[in-house]
Image (cartoon, rainbow, N blue to C red; front, side):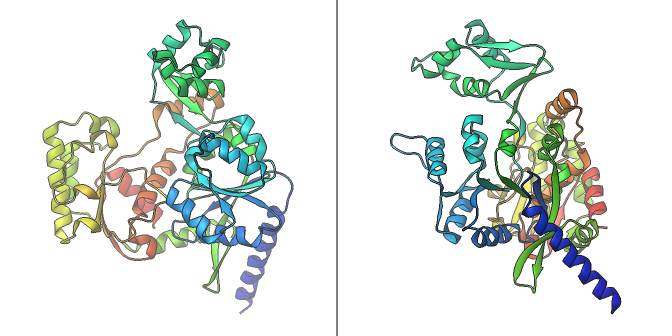
Length: 433
């Protein structure tokens, strides 16, 4: 009996600590690190509803469907739209000036300038899932940068490896001429905003400004396995403090947040792992014989014949359970998704980096044919510029679990999983044991 009372006292202590941190004036990023399906969005909706009279909110989500969900739950929320004489970002700035609560997408947030971000100092941002704060930029290449340099539109600082725009470049941005330089308006805008860098004399890196975090009065990031994300590395790089929390459900009705406890997280992981029927049979061996390491490079170099064979193996696995197309999910790297034909299940492909969506919560038979690593350019950029290391193990585990939890396991229902990569199988078993 005394042990239970002690536990309850510790829980109350945790809640008091949470309340104190939520009310502090110092910016500390609140990371709600809680497993998928644990109620993060439900908590956020409740928190916003209960604090509308005292706070102004911006809710940011990867999907427009979730923007609609927030607006349905809290009718006072607005979302930016393209206007006749105003862009979506311009409409957002207008909504902020008018003091509206806002629901919007990740993409719109990523496109904001430091000047626009300065408008948000009175707002609390709730970020659903981590953002690509640092990413490999593939929409233009070094040849495009050379065109802009030769035209005098941009300059390059070899010490910071950073591009900057010139007055001539600003003129190209405004130009309606049909030229290669004027077509690179997006790249010129990124350079003007200080977001585009060169790494290793071979790759372009897009790094969002730290003001994307520091401009807000308060900020919550709702995710899982935070230390395995690039967002974590970004906070480390810029010395931005954070504190972790978890979701709990009071009386099986309302959601609350408490200080993060590793033991609580582990218990939840073990409970979910018991719902996974992990295939240990011949299909693992067949796939490894077909494409080897399952890495991005191995898959990119896969022949059409091997891609066809991979599709046949996955189809055979799905048919073991007599699963229909709408009941399965499969994934490979995007570079070969069009080569791999999984007959009868062609529409069941889900990108390996999918997260946040609940559209597939009825699926029960999965094949995850991926060996995940951090992008080498991003990893090298963080290490060289900031001396920050990416936790490869947590990053790979996070990506895999996010994908797996698109299925019905998020509803505490069992699933079948084909996971042919030995490294990924080991990570999953360690997570759930």
